[in-house]
Amino acid sequence: MSSTVEVKPHMLTWIRRSFRRSRPPLSDTDQARQLIAAIDRGGIPLDPARVNAIARNLGLEVSPRAPVEQTIERIRAWLQRCA
Image (cartoon, rainbow, N blue to C red; front, top):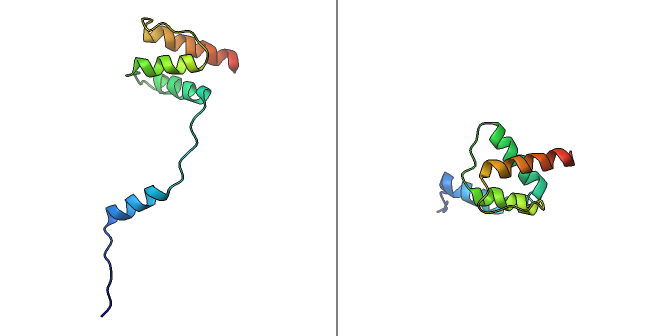
């Protein structure tokens, strides 16, 4: 009598994901580029704290009361200077 184990498809997916190599974290500049690219495609930044964190990681001083649009323009200008 042979015993076969039936593995469900979702279990195989879980196993594959568990052993998948994780990507290295993005650099601050790459995060800023992705943010601006998403906004240019029509996206709306939903988390102002994340936008401020990206700006601070680039070395920009950001007021917590500054409008998100202003912070985005400062990030855009920083990327232009670095390009």
